[in-house]
Image (cartoon, rainbow, N blue to C red):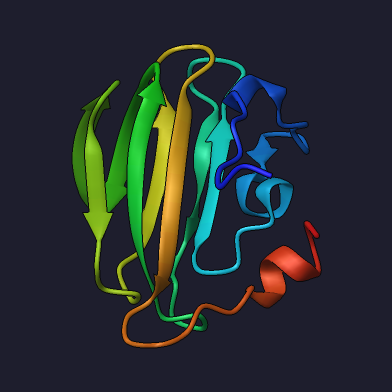
Length: 125
């Protein structure tokens, strides 16, 4: 048995625009998922806060080009851009500027052991 798992993002079965990386790989230490927009203008990261989970989140544009809005501030985010939102009360969203825009998201509550959020267990789990 090897000490790693190798998978390509395209090999993980998507659930609509959500690519459940954490679930697929059985990751228990932190949250990590990806989201892919089909067309330019589509929402790639839904408008939300993290006040219930208190997660800090790191967004990485791995394909395409996104336009983030964090607390009303617009952020141009071409492929390779990292957007860190440390305040769970910050409102955030992202829209694809190119078809196939894909954003990798990782997050967890600072200083606490990771727990799967009710959102992931219920609505999408």
